[in-house]
Image (cartoon, rainbow, N blue to C red; front, side, top):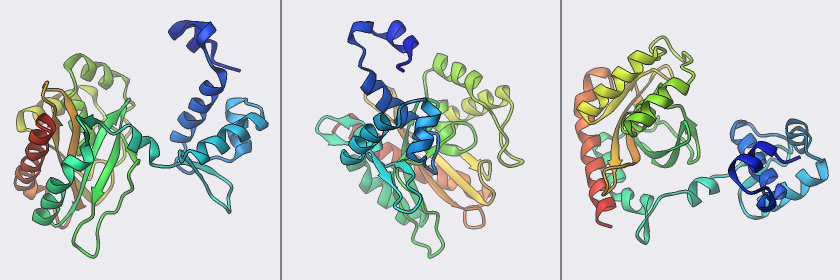
Length: 264
């Protein structure tokens, strides 16, 4: 059944389309299950008829929004949602405007460079350029990450409008991932102010042991946050003492992209 609250609170019930609502709820549910769900599991979670789920998932697969594992029969999201939601700046996409700076940053740092944006209370990776080292951090577009325990997430939080930033900090569940994860809301607010002053954010194994990140914001012509660019590396190759130097490189790359975003 459609969520009556959605129909009554946000749209005229006469204009509400249950099949579209079901498709969106399937996408939302799969977004919270990276390992995927079977048709039976989708039907059970959402209390939808199996034949309806079958039709909707087949349609979403045909349109490229879902993939399905031939062995486990689990549906998973593809990166198409990320691609279609990519900010368009005039006639050029953000990734197109960013690739030269990303590759230059990768060459300077020799480490993996990624770009991402905020969607809801999470960040999502839009694109990555892999490190030049044989042992490197490899990620896929579409991977989501929290806004509190890593450099890009904290940058997306820090450079959001103040009212939104405060409300988001209150909503976030600050679960510890490593002994260094920020789990205190006041401390996270202070960290956001520090990031705004520095122009870049860092994390020293706050999300994952042994991985360090340095990130900086990309800003549009109206002064609003568009995305963030960052470097990720094993902690032994990018120790905490190197953060200021890496921060300057990342800010330089972010400024180059910002200039292209503002003058596409």
